[in-house]
Image 1 (tube, rainbow, N blue to C red):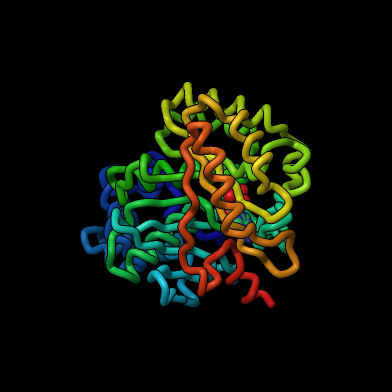
Image 2 (cartoon, rainbow, N blue to C red; image 1 turned 90 degrees about the vertical axis):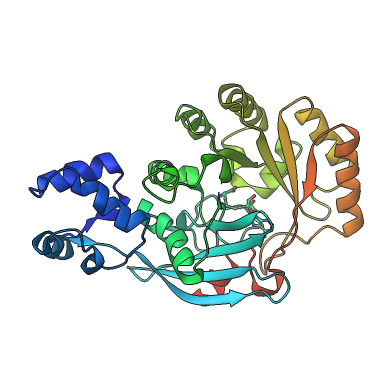
Length: 343
Ligand code: SAH
């Protein structure tokens, strides 16, 4: 018999499921709280449910979907990187970053990725499969259990393209922010995408207050196509238009990520062109110094170019920051730990 993935069910779905097992509807709330607030990993611990109900759940459902296989702690800044094993033996990475304003977790949304960005480590080997909602939630639950500390911010920026796993990711966001779960404010959740335009339009209809981050990485389509195959499918014009609509609809500021690759997209001219594109938009640019990946495209821009790039944007009154590097001593960058483990 196929085991039921009960942790991927939102409250409504769980109510129907509980009823289908002949239990009262209100049991769903108890069950939900055990899974998503108390974060227990065994049905036995759910002591306010009857023994027969627990037995039945144990026989038909699975609870824990990921387990920590390795933990690396950065000596520089305390960033922790986890290699997480899924029930089928696949691995993903999850990163915990400690900031003064709280603990931030970066989750993976797929095993591998099929977007093929040429500088990225996660895309080596292509896409194996998308993660279930429970597998995305459990990355956070495992870390919270492991550290005993509350997670306050979540970024969907690990391995995978979240909008290529749309339904599971949107349900993940709703369940993570549900008052019956960890109740993490949607304002503290960021979703990063390489720019799947039709899915961005879908997302703005979901009535969420998350931050949308777009991996732009280029000032024009020509350069973007050198870096990202997805640029063959969607133009920057289409992406920027979708973002403007997203801002209009949600009132939320959009973040543009821009990974600086030496000699490819990091000149003053490139910065000028980017400014022209973004002028007047409610947005923020996050410059990311490339983490050069062996066998992948590019070298990191030199610090002076990064600063100059920033200055050009600032002069045009565009909100810009350079991403602080976290955990650079523990392969915290983008799929590198998983790759090491695959070899
Ligand atoms: N697929 C999503 C989310 C995962 S990647 C997306 O494309 O946004 C998260 C961010 O890290 C993206 O902006 C991505 O382009 C960037 N990134 C990937 N590999 C990198 C590398 N080697 N160095 C710096 N940034 C990288």
